[in-house]
Image (tube, rainbow, N blue to C red; front, side, top):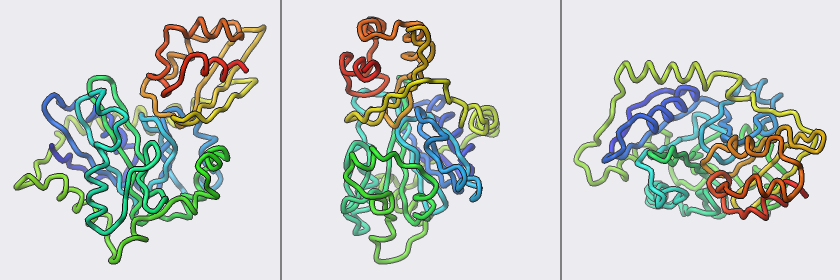
Amino acid sequence: MKLISNTSNDPTINLALEEYCVRNLNVENEMYLLFYINQPSIIIGKHQNTIEEINKEYVDAKGIKVVRRISGGGAVYHDFGNLNFSFITKYSPEFFHNFEKFTKPVVETLREMGVNAELGGRNDITVDGRKISGNAQFTNLKSMFSHGTLLLNSHIEDVVQALNVKLDKIESKGIKSVRSRVANISEFLKEELSVEEFREKIIKNVFKEYETVPTYELSDTEWETVNKLSEMKYKTWEWNFGRSPEYNMQKVNRFDFGQVDARIFVKEGKIKNIKFFGDFLGYGDSADVEKKLEEVIYKEEEVSNALKDTDLKYYFGNVELTEFVKFICL
């Protein structure tokens, strides 16, 4: 295990750094841990429709950055009171969707601090039923990362105001509001702790078997690549906002693995365009599924035939073909 050296607070740089590392570092016999603290920002899940996830008026007024990440899951709020961690490793089916493996050292550290933390739901760390951390994963089937947020002392009012939380998500979790569901870790601590001190505690726990913490320093050339990726992708409107489709019908369902929101444009009985949004955690690019449905007659049997050889679990989660087709067509 090596700790990646990083001091940036720019979310466009930090997400570019994370993507560079998962795609380029040698993970064959090594695992890496990356931490980053972002300035106030909303980080959008890969499959989400940005404009519907944010309170744009509030975000613009507060100067909050909006950046899309390459992993699935829901939108999260970051600020200087939030610590982000990312474990980067070789891909293994055993590791993917295994959030317990990667959150274990974080949960252990919190418990040592007297915080009764546990992994709950599909990908959250909770304390007394309140969420203090959300987690997601990405893989290219060669390498992968599992990353998460840790709300130490974030501005909860900004979390509440900046995000548009779907009513069905609130109802499915049996909660009344974001405010009642989300908590800062500081609420459960007896003494004040800075984000930097919190990070050091986790590092000490993760590297407890090492005499000194082994670090990975990116070269100047590597940082140039990261900065270029930030400019060409993470700072662009096209990546962060530009996926809104033309559509004349909307199908929304909350499955066990998350919400899927299908925007479908049907003309002369055929699917001319379809886009999938949501907080689902599948790691395939749903654009592959969208392409298979273009020009398909909008009937159950035709849609089913078009998708019969598609591994829907790879793209969305644990869903059967019949169930998915009914969702699209009924």
